[in-house]
Amino acid sequence: MIYERVALIGLGLIAGSMSLAARRAELAGEIVGTARSAETRAIAKEINLVDRIVGTAAEAVKDADLIVLAVPVGAMGMVAEEIGPHLKRGATVTDVGSVKRHVIETVTPHLPDGVHFIPGHPIAGTEHSGPRSGFAELFDNRWTLLIEGDETDQDALARLRKFWEKMGANVGIMEKDRHDLVLAVTSHAPHLIAYTMVGVADDLQRVTDSEVINYSAAGFRDFTRIAASDPTMWRDVFLTNRDATLEILGRFTEELFALQRAIRTGDGEHLHDYFTRTRAVRRGIIEAGQDTEAPNFGRGQKKV
Amino acid sequence: MIYERVALIGLGLIAGSMSLAARRAELAGEIVGTARSAETRAIAKEINLVDRIVGTAAEAVKDADLIVLAVPVGAMGMVAEEIGPHLKRGATVTDVGSVKRHVIETVTPHLPDGVHFIPGHPIAGTEHSGPRSGFAELFDNRWTLLIEGDETDQDALARLRKFWEKMGANVGIMEKDRHDLVLAVTSHAPHLIAYTMVGVADDLQRVTDSEVINYSAAGFRDFTRIAASDPTMWRDVFLTNRDATLEILGRFTEELFALQRAIRTGDGEHLHDYFTRTRAVRRGIIEAGQDTEAPNFGRGQKKV
Image (cartoon, rainbow over all chains, first blue to last red; front, side):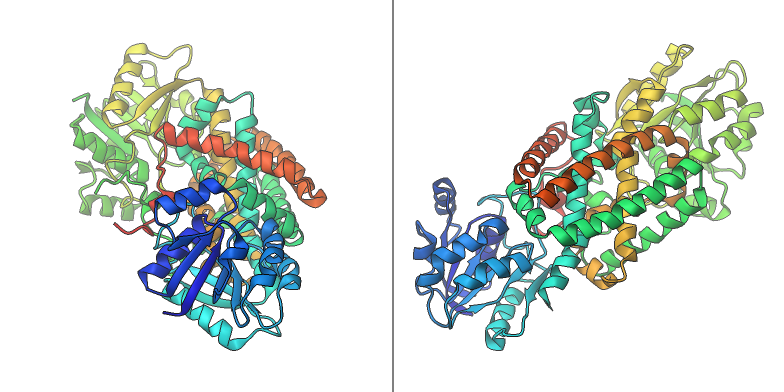
């Protein structure tokens, strides 16, 4: 056991998976959960997602040793304001938001002295959301980033790190602005691009929806998975990691224009060189165990 | 049996899978194969990919009833020129290229009277290529498009359709320019976008390769799968379906700029509405059986 009592604020994919992963490794004496929506609380209760469900965040954090903020990034400040007065001295507060600078700026002012705030971000997820979407293996061999600043309490950090490692994750420590830049590259820009492409396909009057759907296997369907992620979460990510996302999208557009020019002028050598280089990135990801080598993600066309 | 003798010109992912799928359903008396590279021919022989390997395309098509051109789109015309004089009267020639107008324009002039040319395109594939990458189930429940024009021989078309259906595919009939537009949306533009994003990430001096690789699970790794596809094939696709691809990329850029503006101005409602709409496209694809509902494509995080 690492924490006597863990409070989960929000009961979506990440919090639900944390509860199941913490149970699997027996990391908490009791896991208390809450969610703003009564329906979410009812489902969590029905499927026994946490040990105890309560009606408010203020109630959930009472006597908790670890508090996990697992709500959309745009709601973090509000939740912090609500729980601030009820936090136990010596408790650790963490979060699982995809953006770190904004969360730190909005949460920190509401936390009392003697409470340790260690922002976090599990780099794991699926396109599903809600209390039924969690599973204990979500973090296995995935990375979780914890944010260290000048005033970080090292004992609290070490304990939270152990908690994540026991839930199956590799843990990395990163500075907040670096986190927001790296994630703009590996996550935020790709998501916006996928959303855009799926929106364009859906909009095109000259191509029917059934054509888009039936012939999606040619590449497009991977975009649709990404573009099926939770709209509220992603709205908040883009609004709160605006500068880094726009910077990367600027680089993307520049490069896209260069490739479009190569297509227009028939510069096959430029295209071939570019496409050869990108293959190497894929190999790196497979070697690092961050994806499967099975063709098509082993989508099951190869029957076993 | 549908064809007495089938000749496969090129022995990559598609041709290899066709051989295995045709064997599975006993659709051909003999399958003859050839490839330009001696190494490819040697591997195909070693793994018994086809019934007989020959050294040249001219030799392969001798007495063949169905000839499948399974080479990069840019090489189709050259192959047609080579085999033209050796084709049997009454034979059907088809291809599996991702672009149709260009293939028709470059292949047709080389085919003698009495030979039926029915262009085709299986909407199926993986990021792997080469003679070892094929598998018999590749076309199961995927769509194959056959191109019909004013002069298409209906008997030859019906026979080829049956051949594809017996290999597991759903078959659609489409006009060549419509094909090139639809595929620009569902395949060509998404591939160029994925290549671009992976190239940008790889290029960024400010983010290390290991950061990109370790934190790829956040969305980026799906792009890397697409961007790991065969460089020669894709160079040819873009060069030969230039107009439709550039048109769709133009629409994409326009829409991306609108979303960037919404991020810059903090228009959360616009973003949320857009992201909600794109979820519906995903549902359509799953309902049509063109992808799995398993989270993350069932990447195996959920152990079974």
